[in-house]
Length: 319
Image (spheres, rainbow, N blue to C red):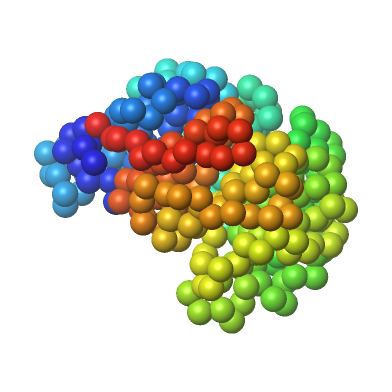
């Protein structure tokens, strides 16, 4: 793949798209890249100078790892990572540091232009109501990492609790969070969770004691109280890393060694998809019902084009 500034992108952690054409991806080494043409070309907006190219200017005051990105519109977006939250108001041309802290922030999510959340290590939940000028801590009652956050509307949201394998739920826009115990903490960890409505949700469950980190997809129909592995998604020691549901029936999960599975029946059955790469995939996201993107190792970015019940997967280029 080709890169701007002749830098090598070793790993892409997370991707977010404003629409089918405009998207951003982030990763280690303070990496932020952007496409404006649906993934045909990707430009590096920001990357810390490293041994691969000492001629590129160092980004002063930056940290080494960006974990998650979220954009409100084409101009306003947020990136979180190791000890930091940054914001842009000009489509990624410039970035301002909003917060430095003692936490590794794993995920950022906004429910509107002003109200947003950053979650991460040590059970941290930060909430802003003014577009990130002030971030206030919210009690989570969790001491381990919080790994994913999503909302089904402006009031109802869910957070996956990592090694405590529980779910946090809010019904008041994130002011208060109640833990839903799943009983799974003795067996593994919740890597990521996505709800399609107040009762129906899916999660990646990493199983303890499995060599190389085996995992499978589990489903709840009672708001997270009980979970079942309805679909046969565990294949040997595959490690799944991210999942996304386009609607109540169609969903994708991606993982190591290019593992990409799709369901069209709400998780009852999962089918392996042909992939144009053998790299580990870390994240999958769909900005529309038609187009999605998966990212991962060695600068891998795959564009997924939905065609009825099937999908075509083509590798994007970075320039």
